[in-house]
Length: 258
Image (cartoon, rainbow, N blue to C red; front, top):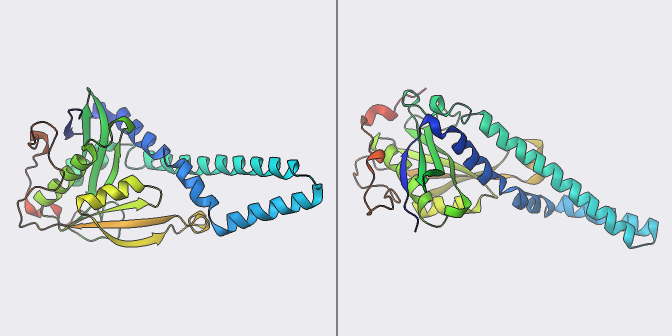
């Protein structure tokens, strides 16, 4: 296991954080393409196109070539749409990380550091400040990502544990997160951390309904009276929580962040 530590975000981490997040999200593009192509309307469209071309051309070569070009075009368009979504994320809270996750905003952002570079990220913000439908006392966990070569070593669990420990120390009542259907590793990790499925919905856009892009909301109920550490909150260095994890705040800090 590679030694790592979880520490608060610094301004010098800006480019690395954006690169880690964008690279991790880009990995889901192939899974998104497969998900869309398995939709009934997509299969019907491809099947009808193939049959019409086969009937008109009376040759197998033309329909096969046309279908290959159609699939390539679909993959390109879906890749562009996914890239635009990633860019919107980068232009939102990751445009000015210090302001979006600063102490004044009632939020925090952490990075995982190994081999003298940033290999993972996670942040939490008050649900009311993030535009969610949660009330006071709820935090939203966002932007969790781990570099491909460093996965499976407990880094994601440690990042999630740091976020949960922060929420518990602030007296929050719950932490929520949203995960798309293609983010299988993220969904499995949050369930291991103790999150429970709260609800599921389709993205309220034309593209969301056509592609059946479902989002699962997970929820972690916190017992603010318990002083037990959150799962996964230990670092890889001797099994002790790092000093960077320690947060000195009042139990009232999670109230009224509007």
